Each structure stands twice: as C-alpha cells, then as structure tokens.
Picture 1 (tube, rainbow, N blue to C red):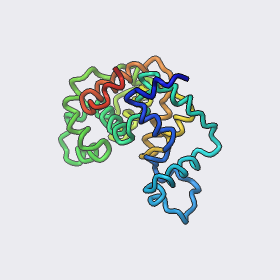
Picture 2: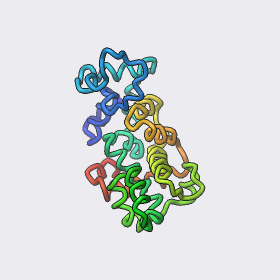
Picture 3: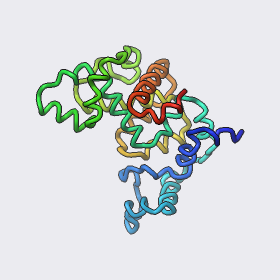
Picture 4: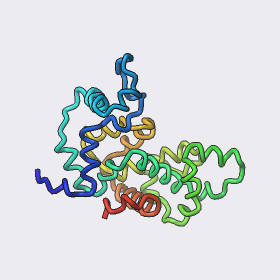
Length: 223
C-alpha cells in the first residue's frame, strides 16, 4: 500500500481511529470491563485508554490496511470526523429532514422537546434548512421513513441514518469502531445504515451541504 495517504488532511484522524478506538467511548459499550478500574480514569490516561480500546476489540481480526483503504473514498471520510462534529451533523440532518415542521412550532413544550433531542444549534438552523433542497422520496425510503416524522427522537434517528447512508459500505472493523462511540444508540443507527445504496449519493450531498454551512473546517476533506 502506498504511503501517499499520510500527506492527506484526514491522515491524523485515520491513525487515531486505528490506534485509539476508545477515544470517544460510550460507557455502555464497555461490557465486562473490570470494576476495579473505573472507566473515567481509564479514559483519562492515554496508555490505559489504548489498552481499553484493544480490549474492546478483542476477537476482531484487526486489519488497519482495510481502514486506511476506506479513506480513499470521499464518502467514507465522514467516518473519520471527530465524534462530536459527526453527532452535530446527525442532529443538523434531523433538523433538515423536519425543517418544514420545526419552523412552524409555537408551543413552548414542543420547542423544548425538539431542543432536547436535536440541540439548540439544530433548532436555530431549521429556518435555514427549510431553504435547502428537500430530502428525496428515494432517500427517505432508504432510511426506512415513508413520511417526514414529527417526533424529535425520530428526526434524530433519521439524521443518524442519513449520516450512515452517506458514508456507504465500510469494513467491519471500522463499523465496530464507530459503534463504540457516544451516544451509542445514535451511532448504532448510523452504523446500521452504512451500506452501498442508490440513495447514498443523495445522502452524501446533503451532508456536504451541512458541512459547508455549519462545520466548514472539514469541507476540504470532501472536495
């Protein structure tokens, strides 16, 4: 394998994904970790955290070359975004899906429920999201949503599924690493949607629009 990828702007993120899979760990995924070593302490110490990551992936056939090869595809690079920014994109994608309904909310309780599920940034983004191209019927069908959901939690699930669909098919060892991230239920929805699908390009284009508008520092990864 050529070493040219080491000069790419996403190289550091790929190396961190390979070497430190527990960096963004959701505690609920650490099944069977010994109680005498509290997880918060283990995660705070880089050496112990790396050992924890290896322990979590025990039994996996670890082939870093497969993960490195995955970053050659523009869409797959979404998988290497920092965990917090990736979750931001999922929430923004949820706001994009439900933009028409979110912009019309009046009741304080409804607004609070959306804010709790999608976050303040996504709520503020909804009016702008309503001006973007709307999700196609093919895309909504690909994520298992026949209609635009109204429940905030369902919108969040849609956002996670679109994120995963945008990534496309990736190696199992990368799927496993993403599944360790927090919040685990959200990443589980994203990983479940990581597959090759005709609507994947629509999902990826939606993610690129959101990156350019809200997290532009990563936009050059997808040029």
